[in-house]
Length: 412
Ligand SMILES: Cc1cc2nc3c(=O)[nH]c(=O)nc-3n(C[C@H](O)[C@H](O)[C@H](O)COP(=O)(O)OP(=O)(O)OC[C@H]3O[C@@H](n4cnc5c(N)ncnc54)[C@H](O)[C@@H]3O)c2cc1C
Image (cartoon, rainbow, N blue to C red):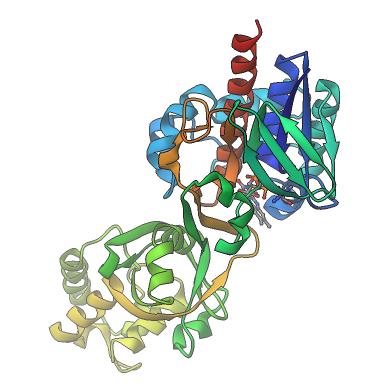
């Protein structure tokens, strides 16, 4: 009997093991998980609700949510994308719902629906699971098989799927070093920007629905909701920016200038023209009271003060110079980022196995035939919104299917 060893009992490992075991009947699929708990990230994900995927169904658009993996995931998403993920779970009795922002959750709002489904499917397919068994080494043999050395045993495997997730430190990849795969050093992704001592933090709790945040020196920008916190700035736009610039920010020790455009719909010139025209009919209203762009009141007051405009100044008396100053801040409000805070809800690692050495049609290693990779162990990570799990389902499914196909070919 052929033996397949799947390393890691997370989203990618389960998908790979289930697909492979349900297709190849005369094969033993053994899943080894180092911790005592299977699917631990799925359990806690999405605040316990598990944001399984996203309703961005077009692969061409979907890949833009992957700062690492954008090019490589395009083909795989045509084979198994969010629509196939939905179908996979719903055909197994887990009904899903799509929220207004595109995030997909189980209707139960409980990640255990996903966990239980995966556990049941693995059992049905005959996947053998050992927990508290850590793989310490993979030794490729000259006949194309592998020796898997774990904390408890030694196995011979005809095919191996490495789905061990991301690690925050380069040394944690040492157990894979025998394989000579290039490891892109891991750095955090998806974090909020700290602005220590900046007065804007006094507005904590305030959010705007649409802002552009950018780091001009990296030419990175992102648009979306922004949230001011106790420490600095957060919200989807900032998290997205952190993912886009994850490596450069790490290189610069999280010290960088960040701009906020509070009025993404207007250019600086359009903003001044609007204020020149509104000034004419402003009557006795003060600039503070005017709030012509309907920004959250406290934010408008903050920006007016930051422009150096006296609180009592009447809008009708506002000089051209101050109008320009105001518009420059509304359009390019500068902040000194000093440090980061990892977003506890969705922490992912940027870095991992280099994508160049993996064939994305099968997820097979280009260095060792018979060895496959799936999930976050690869140098793939995404923005928030269910995209990280989608990459795990897609790569796990493709690897599982490719292993089953390869076994069929070698022993039809
Ligand atoms: C708190 C939190 C919430 C999240 N919420 C979401 C969300 O709602 N939506 C979303 O899309 N993404 C979310 N993510 C990201 C998502 O969880 C990951 O991208 C995803 O779990 C990656 O799946 P994986 O199977 O590749 O890795 P993992 O889920 O990390 O699984 C890898 C498994 O391998 C095991 N392992 C590691 N090394 C070994 C070894 N040597 N031997 C044996 N076993 C080993 C680990 O213990 C682990 O169980 C969240 C992440 C966190 C931390």
